Each structure stands twice: as C-alpha cells, then as structure tokens.
Amino acid sequence: MSRRTHRITKQVRKGRTNKAARIPHSGQHAIEPATVQVLLTRASCMNFLRPTLLTLACLFATHGMADDLPSLGDASSSIVSPEQEHRLGRAWLGLLRGQVAQLSDPQLKDYVETSVYSLAETSQVQDRRLEFILINSPQLNAFAAPGGIIGVNGGLFLNAQTEGEYASVLAHELAHLSQRHFARGIEAQQRMQVPVMAAMLAGIVMAAAGAGDAGIATIAGSQAAAIQEQRRFSRQNEQEADRIGILNLEKAGYDPRNMPTMFERLMRQYRFDARPPEFLLTHPVSESRIADTRNRAEQAKPGGKEDSLLYQLMRARVALIYEETPGIAAKRPSRRSRADN
Image 1 (cartoon, one colour):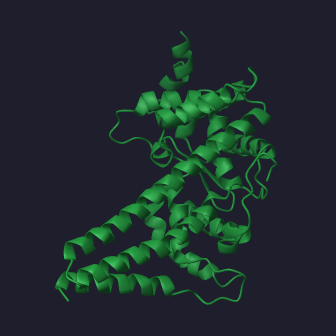
Image 2 (cartoon, rainbow, N blue to C red):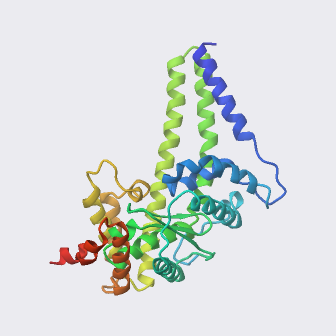
Image 3 (cartoon, rainbow, N blue to C red):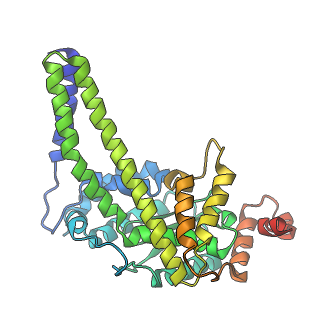
C-alpha cells in the first residue's frame, strides 16, 4: 500500500472511530457533538465557542403546526428533542453572554422583547420560552438559536429603516424556530454520513488496487457532494423561513412587502462589499430570493403597518450609541428622512 493510501486509510479509520464514540446515557436521546455544528451556522461569528459547545453537548447527553404548513413528523425529535434544544440553547446563551459586549439600554431591550413576543403570537412557534440577547455591534445581524434564543445586533436598527422591515427580519428568524431547522439540519447531516463514508471507502479500495488518482478523485467527489447537499439544504431552509415569515407578517398586521424591500436595499448597499455584514453571510440575498419574496408579498392585500414613532425613537437611541459625537447625531436627520427629501 502506498504512503498516500495508508495516510487516507488512517484518516478514515480515525473519523469512523470518532463517529462511533457515543456518550452513554440514561435519557431518551443523546446529543452528539456533531449536533452543535448547525447551531454555530446561525451565529457563525461565535466560532471561538465551538470547543466549549462540544463539551456542553456531551454533558447534556446524560439527560434524558399550523394547517398551512408541511408536517414535520417525528424524525427530527428522535434525534434532538425540543427539550434538549431548550437546554442546549440556554447553556449556549450563557456562554455567549460572557463572550460578547451587550447593549444595556432597558428601553431598547423592552422594545425588542415586546415586538418579538407580539410576532410570536401569530407564528407557529409552540415553545414560547424565548430568551433575548442584544449584541453591542453596529453590524447588521439577527439570529435564532435552538431553544428559543433570539439575538439582535444594534446594527439591525441602523439598517432597517421602518418597523415593518425590522419585523420582517425577526419574522424570518421565528420561522427558523417554528420549523426546527436546527434539528432538521442534524437529521439531514446524519442521512448524508452513510453514502459519503461508502464513497470514501470505495475510493480507498480503488487507491489500494492501484488506481490511485481515481481513488483520490472518488474521495474528493464524495466530500464535494456532501458540501453541495449541505448548501442546498441551507437554501431550502432560508426559502421556507422567508415564505412562512411573509405569512406571519401579514397575520401580525404588517405589510409583507417590507421583506423584499429590505432585501432589495441590502443587496444594493452591500453588493460589492469585500466584507458584507454577518447577516448576509448566513442569509445570502440573491435575485431569485428577492423575486420569490416579492411575488408572494404581492399576493397579500395592500396596506398594513409599516412604521411607528416608537421604532424611530429606538433607531435614534441606537444611532446615538454608535455616533462618535452624540450631539451631532441628535441634530442629524435620519437616513429615511434624507431619502424622502
């Protein structure tokens, strides 16, 4: 056997050993360390928490929809139960609070909590034990983590020019929770493990038989297929969250056209940026995505809430936080006011 084939064989054996190392438990289901990978994609700026989250997943392993939506079945719950998601999410939130700067404005916190709970009333989120974290960052971002964790950057207020646009982002995030995209992502990941491993083993056999280049190509192809499948699943989740978010926006009394309007402006604003905001990295905006949300929003009746004085006051408070000279910011008209003029 060549050195290269021997090295590949060792790597596969090592990966197979790690995969088989399950934590014994007395509860109903175990959370495998790989489970945390999907959670991290919802707030990828927290990559430094990955080792600690893997440890938490091992610790928790010892403990035991609406008519217009597709039935999720029980497959996801057989892998990660809602209660396990809740415990993992709370543990992750505790770690996150110790690692990032937070906004301590009580009025802003009250506004976010009140507005999200109001949106949750018209959503399909069944477990409404929501927890919130306001991150002190001017970068645009919002995320939902398992267990009802909602994160909002101060930059969301700077970029969402109306309350309807702000609500469209959070309605999208609530849809991720109601559809349990975290648990479904783990389920999809496990489905892919068997065919990928089979293809890699086939590649090793080919390499051992003397077809070295063909074996390496087979292994690389199986890995590429797994990555492509993961991206496809992520795109499907985003599309589903958009469509459900639009329905719930309308139920909450907002004009659902706020969602495509927000997407269109973000695409124009950050299209050529070398470093787009975190939100666009985890929620990529494309022409097809904008067209889909626009077509669906146009089917709703015209009208609905778009803005409120209270939201504009919250925007002004956030603008003061990130303005180097607050006195100047207080006298400066908002972006929306300048655009209207």
